Figure (tube, rainbow, N blue to C red):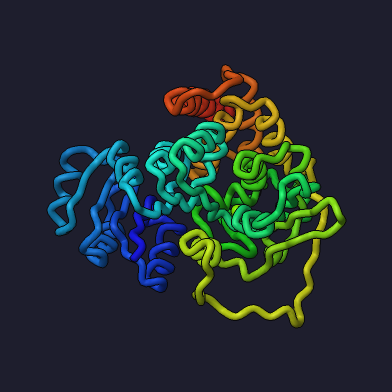
Length: 384
Ligand code: MG
């Protein structure tokens, strides 16, 4: 029976992964979360055989949390990576942010299958992740719906027969609006995603389309295609999850309900398929639309391509600045258009190294970008 560790267990992906794991009859062997919380304690009680790891929390909070549950508990970021490196485990990495990179690498180096929902691993540390994959002989199966779709479309195909990858984007809640309309949009409006129910950061990233930019970088590393062979098209219904255009003119697309349990299950059971959770799908009565990305209203997409072209630490800086800017927006400290402006300004100001050689280098670039971004956010605030 497959043993699974779920990192980011209390988040949106973590919870859906636990549902899929229960459905498949797999065993939950480990649960990791960023903070001790009543939700984590409840998950621990539901999985009495699982070790629990909490990445952060001071001594007092840690002791208090450990006294509430019967599971073995460990603390610290190192313990998260250690959990990912236990041999023979499937690692579901649903950590949000660049903090997930170390666990992805640890899991792959140990030869494990990593079901990757932490897109920042590939965005910030793509070359390091792909090296770890090659070194450990593990498996990297994407959980992000677009990349799961591409993985399925590319299965059994020769990469040289591929003309281009086509990532679909829902367009978010502000599709069709002009840039001037977005000056004063509220947090609530930005959080109202039309098709997907997700965590806070990714929902805001979907509203700015930064999420799609990050996904372009993710696909570039994961599948090894040049950036000029990766396109984005807006598809408001989120039924076509992505497509591959082949040299003979044929196109393979992957379709289905926008339900993350489908790509999560695929990553857990690949190459097998078994009966899944969720509603049956019908084509009848559906209209599928496709349109160009409005690159003027949503400059995040081109900014991400630009960071990816620079390579090295630039995509890490892009991601870190975006994490800070989205947090500031959610806290009411930054306007919606300010998010991408902060990212662009941080990219201009941050130092940038062309080659990635270590996780420490990525984390240092991440920390520097965060410091610059928070300074820029503070001064944008005082001048507005
Ligand atoms: Mg996605």
